[in-house]
Length: 118
Image (cartoon, rainbow, N blue to C red):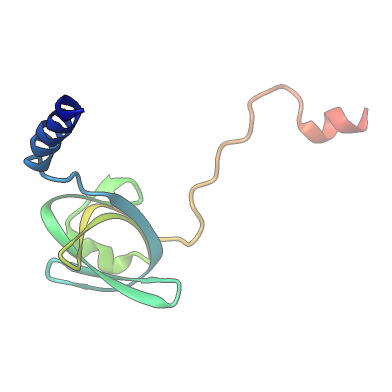
């Protein structure tokens, strides 16, 4: 019994020294403001401000761009982590149109409508 408790204490102390891995959450909404290194996105009815660090990946319609170029975009998907009550963007994927890019239709010889009517 004592060995089990000692083992649990030793194991717990080893894991306590490791920094916790940040949990990334994805937020999607309309871009309302881009100012300096901050990006504000309207997510539902709540405006969220993200601090965009230099190491963050920022893209507009799939092309890497500086953060200031996102002022031309309308919508953004932001992967961010929360530290000490602030949101820090790790990846920002903005798009200039509301709908996401459509998937290409299947490249078979017949369409599904023709197959269904025969």
